[in-house]
Image (cartoon, rainbow, N blue to C red; front, side, top):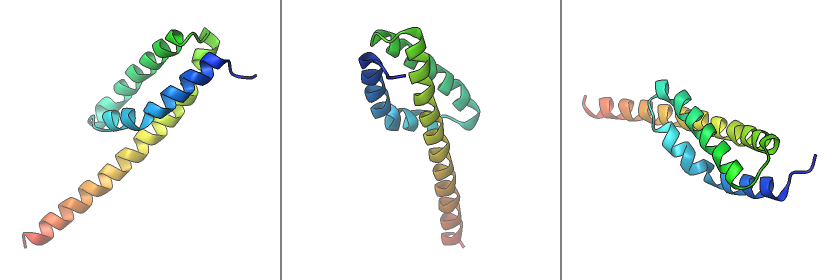
Length: 96
């Protein structure tokens, strides 16, 4: 099925916002990220409707955006964990 022009425009804007949205969600403590992702999904559904997408188009587009967002949030969390671990090791090494 070919996406509508509204769906294409929504996807263009939503995908462009993923880096900033990822930053915000990854900044939450791990136990709150699932809730933040649910809020993001609701907001994306509202935005898709405002772009004029049908319900079916909205669901399909938001599912695609959420898959990418979740992958980016997971990657960001892994990277932040590695950086925090490295910082702790470096700090403890300099305090010896």
